[in-house]
Length: 283
Image (cartoon, rainbow, N blue to C red):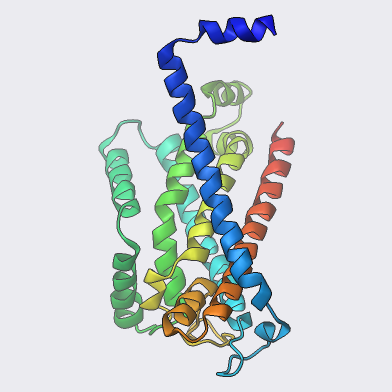
């Protein structure tokens, strides 16, 4: 008790202000998140029924299963497109390009510019370039490439910062043992940066699953299980938007939002478990 009182007395008024601001920010953030989750669960869980998971969508049954399948497909394809480009670009900027060169500064400025563009602009670009100019039409493939461009800056920046956080002593030790540049990157630097890369991928998955504005112009909105990459479709987030905007299916929209929340939490949990395994292997 004496130590606690002594610790409190040592605190300056400015320290208490910073302490209260930090804790208040944390409490407000957690409270807002909990309120959002509880609100969705209270409004949506009572309306979840087996018919929502039927294979087809009809006027009598607003099934979300086709949208769920489309969401999983689009997430997988988008990551397959964006992650290699983002990771390899970051490796080049950190490991191979001369530090402080004009090319590095240009790529970083372009990346920051892309990160600040509204998603609706990406949707218009995807419609003009992928759907119209390339002749893909409104399709899952056009939507995947549009989303890949959207999440590319996020993956690049997180990968770049993860690689920068690796101490140079790791690289110097590898070089002193006779390893070349490529072997050092693939066997030493990149495995050590995998936890940070996975954190960026988790954030990218959240943006893919929750995106709506860019997909309105690129994948159409047809609610069916896609039979090819050139089929139109509808993701869960877009499905919630369409149901709530119609005004007749608010209960089904809240039920779909619960499933969307569960999908996001499940993907994040799976990614976190994979990240922990890589951390253990790295150690």
